[in-house]
Picture 1 (cartoon, rainbow, N blue to C red):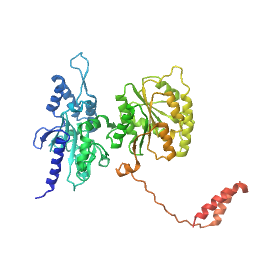
Picture 2 (cartoon, helix red, strand yellow):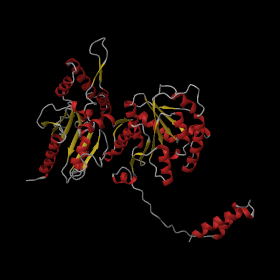
Picture 3 (cartoon, rainbow, N blue to C red):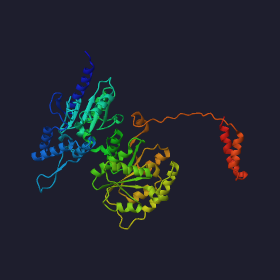
Picture 4 (cartoon, rainbow, N blue to C red):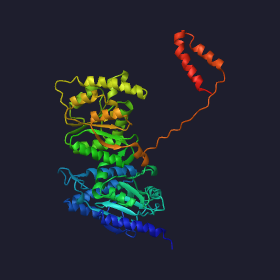
Length: 518
């Protein structure tokens, strides 16, 4: 008898025991033969809403609204999932009776983890979307208050986790059980050798992520898969990941990498102490989205908060606006120093960005290459600083202001920081960079912005497959001179208008090139 299936079943049995015994999820059973399995379990959700004091009639209407959004077949999976997430994240707004004030029916208690109903079932048989679609059976489904928010496909240790990822991707197709994923937040696959990989709806296989966490309560867990599940599926952590670290970015739903999560968490601790600092995350590791998640958290959790993002390149300014707009956050781009002052003096805009180069140089354009760009940055910074010092008499920056300085190593002369701290004496300044720094630049950045809040280095990103390694191959290209006479003729033609003194350096340069050829 083949033991292949038994080995996989043993892994699944162990994960069932882990979820039930160590993470304290309620075990709903093996649902292979249960009829009517769905991503919204009406009885369980209704029971939870009632336990939270929601009147039965209101609970019924909330359930109807959720099912209507999740079951809207005229919309794409992405659109339905986004609208379901909106209801999960912000609650359902309903009027108990005509003429009464609107109330919010919360589907999840985000503030009190233990008030929620965490449960899971195994071998969940789900019928196809229609008569032509095939039935599928996810290995494990995680439910919060009767709503399916996570799915896990398990493979035996000798089968690549990629097989589980592809199985999840197939299940999301119209030919299978696509409607089941309208409530799904985390889509996972794992085995005992590779551990856990995670994504969300429509995440291509190559973008599935691996959670890497050093330290914590489960760092010494010997089994990789068990450790990953304990780290990301503990009740409080899962709620936080769903609530604070999901974005719908211009047609693509995205989850955070662990460096983004721990960077934001570290920044939250600094902000609680009103301390600034530097987030140093290597290039290509998602710095822009780290800004998004941190800005969203600040605006949601700090009373009267406002966020100002400063960049020094046109493309960075455009990128910042595009990223925030893409995740449906309204961001105001200031047009000049005076406009910035006016916006800060008002309370209307809570999220702003400004480009230093708009305040210096022709048409506000930055330099073409890195060296020219840095020189332009210094000139523009001085012009920007000068404009900030011309304050109206009634100026007083409104709100609790947090300043993000992108590529902070390029604005570390201190002039900008000095002017901004004078302008915003109570603001918290957070520098962002991912550029490798020389020792002197590194020290200067720390002096200006404060100590490191969080770092994610290049070698770590390479090990985790987030970025590609840099490789350099030195090559000796053989060259030969076919006609010294033609070189001399070319030189004479190019220098015909020069005197002997001016010809000297040019002739030396040509000589060097000729000497380097074989």
